[in-house]
Amino acid sequence: MEHLLDIATEVFLEHGYENANVSEITTRAGASKRTIYSRYPTKAELFVTVVTRKTLELQESFAKTLVSQESLGKVLEDFGIHLLRSMSQPELLALYKVFVAESPKFPKLASQFWEVGPKRSITMLRDCLVKHPEFKGKNPEHAAEMFWSLCSGPSLLRAQLQIEHQMSEKIIRFNVKEAVRIFLSAYTGSSSVLKAIGSASSVCAGAV
Image (cartoon, rainbow, N blue to C red):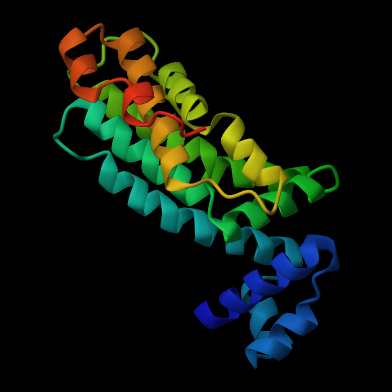
């Protein structure tokens, strides 16, 4: 079944959701239609499984960065770098484009992607903020959303829109360090932590 899902991922990425053919998936995977339909009665369910599988892999790695006993600045930096590295993967970018293209016809699919993907990572960050002693904000849910947005910014949007554009490691670290600096300033007020993180402009001068 794992092999079948790998093949299904390839086919969806090559043809998009609407033009993907279950027959092609079963042929490439060397499986029968009966096998695939016994587990996934509709193409929509198969597509959701493909995306859920990919995003859950990422969520497991996100979780590891959020159980650290490090300072809040270090936890946020690790989470942010991992977030951008993951979201800029070609396969995930391609899946995202499929969702955007198909969402007007299949809003339920887009909603499910949001639940298992971005929303879940934001919720995990929120739960981390609630427990961390350095966080002084009154609305951890909103704070988590703000940090997520600060990290992504125009660089990720450009990567989603332009196939040839790649987010370099230098840009990723620049974006995240600046996001951490701004976040700590707003939600902790700790000057000592800010000095420890340092200004992204001095660490990554000329990154963008």
